[in-house]
Image (cartoon, rainbow over all chains, first blue to last red; front, top):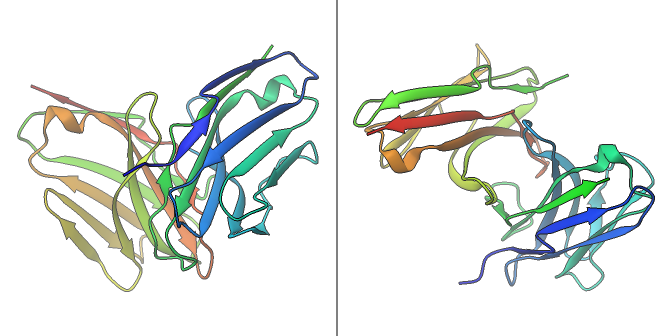
Length: 115
Length: 112
C-alpha cells in the first residue's frame, strides 16, 4: 500500500522567501508528526496533530513556522521569511492510532536549502 | 542538552557476526523506546520497540535490551547482513506523549 508521501522532495529558497511543504499521510492514520533533521543530527520534533487538532507545537523553533491539517489528512508545514538556519530535511510521519504505542511511519522528507 | 545519546557515530562489523548498537538516555520519564533504520534519501523505518515494563524484546534477528537502572538500551543484530548497512536511530518517548526524541544515529557498515 501507499506510504507517507512528501512534496516537493527538494526545495531551494532564497533567504526571505516563504515555503510550503506538503505531507500526505497513510490513509486512515490519525496522528501526524513533523520533524526537522539537520545534517549529522537525528530528527527533532516540531509539531503533532491528532486528526485536525494540533496537540503539540512545542518544537516549532519560531513564529515563522506554522503547520496545519485542516481536514485531518493532508498537512502543510509553512516557513515564512526563510533563514539559512532553516536548511534541513523536514520529515513527516503518521501513525495509526491516537495511542502512544503505535509506530510512526516516515515519509522520505523534503530537503530544504536556503541560499 | 541531548536527552538521547548514541555515542558511537559509526560501527563496522563482518557479515555473519553480531552488531551491537548502544543508546543512553538521561530523562527518567522516558518509558517507551524504539529503534529506526534509515537508508540514504529515505525516511526512517521502524525496526523494533520496547516499553519500560520489559527488559528484552526480540523480533527475528533483532533484539533490544533495556537496562532502566543504567538508563541504557542496546540493539543486537544477529547475524549481521550487508543489507543491514544503514544509519540506526534510537528514539524515546515519555509518559502519555507520542512525541519521539531521537539520538544522533550510528552508521552501521556490514562488510561481506
